Length: 416
Image 1: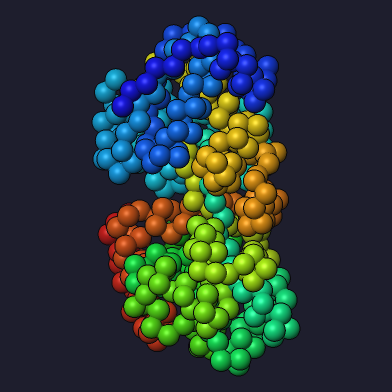
Image 2: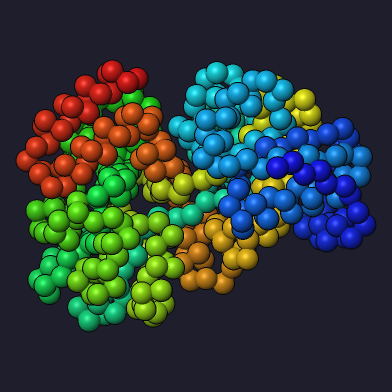
């Protein structure tokens, strides 16, 4: 679908309250945007965003094309090469690597360096390849440990700050006849979340990204240390039994029924916990605790905007990126009545939701290591597939670690 937005006095009045004078540039011509925000709520948000930006610039015509989200994954390369638009939706970290390496995304490092994009320090790393920035994020959500606060109270437990405290809590939970963690690894990717956090906490965000880029051997002693920390949880019976038989949704029942005390998962699990009957007084959230003395890195899958290298109206495209990442616009488009996720600008506000507020505070102020995009986004697709198979196998058969790491290392040498 293609939509063209014309400025109107009413639209200009509504958007000027959000944008302010900072975006009142004298832009002209046509700004072509292709977006994969095809689900109903994101689509409406994108259409309003384009209309608002159009209203701010009477001499500019904003042309928006919405494409199917799954179809866009195969269409984007052609779109970037032939008659390229001026702005496109995509994803951060490794997902943008092929288009950066092919010279199809514009380098916008100067926008970060000269102060055009204030409030994005915590998420800058997700847009950085080869020391340069290639786009802007516009929405993300946190991962962390969601737990049964009533069970913690019953057992006299507090939110842990260190991995030693985490393990001590786990011992008490297991002694009470419960599992420490619900998890469903039937579809593999949840095991990736555990590896992400254990590796970022053991070796740091930069090391984790080096591993994702294929620059570190899977047999490296530092990787083995990550698995050694993971095994401490496995050996004490910290996870629910037969987790490889459950999807992540099916495994939620163990937490809602009180058979498991917590779940390392993304914020998307919260509505399911509430729908299952748990109140906000029964569930809470904390940041994955510290292991080594390294800056905290976090998983926060992020959606992005980019300027194609072959764009025709780069001046307007840069202004749009500046607009969409501004604190006021970020607060608006990520609201509960729109995207219902987290704004990327540290100066934005979030809806009055306990978990969104906690996640925003964590990612804005306590993710100094950097923001990762999750195992299956940060690693190339084939490596992610082989890797997650190995991670699930390790959780079930930890004695197989040497064979698992060698298979993953063989895959690394072949794939990269």
